[in-house]
Each structure stands twice: as C-alpha cells, then as structure tokens.
Image (cartoon, rainbow, N blue to C red):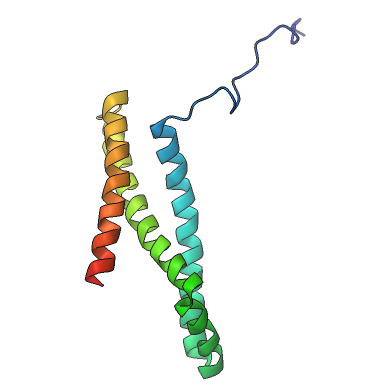
Length: 127
C-alpha cells in the first residue's frame, strides 16, 4: 500500500474563500429551474386530474392555483421555463465546441439571464 501523508496536503477552498463565477451560478440555476419545472408540471397535472374528478376537487385545486401563492408559482414557472430553454440552447452551442472561452461564456450567461427576464415580461404582457 502506498505511504500517503494525508496531514500535510492543502485543503480545497470552501465557500468562505471561493467566489462564485457567473458560469457556475448559471449552471446551478439551470438545475434549479429544471427541478422547479417538474414541481410546476405536477401542480398543473393535479389541477387537470381535479378537473376530471369533479367540482369539489376542482374547486380546491383551482383555488390554490388562483391564490397569490399559485400565481407566484406560475409566474416563477414561466421565468423558469424561459431560463431553462435559453440555458439549454447555450448548452447546445457549447456542445459544438464554440463559446467555451471565459469572456464568451460570461456574455452568454448574462444574455440568458436578461433574455429570460425579457421573455417572461413579454409572456405576461401578451397573456
């Protein structure tokens, strides 16, 4: 077995030392929005199943979706949908081997954040 001196090795930087980069934040947001969209779909499926189950069940589900909380969740879902779609397009662009340098990746990160906010506002205005 190898003689490994584990006591003198440097420790990895932790959150107190590490400054998050825009590319890491957008990557984390992509994962968060993907999971949030799963929850939003489950909420919509619950609403549809309640509509098929009868007026009593539908009244409860519709009341939740039309409440301030349901409205907030649906608005957040619209933003998450746009963000996740734009981040997926950026990822496809990265898969071609283009845009992988740090300045371009940061510009694309800012673009998907701004684009998702702009597309969300347009969706709210048009619907």
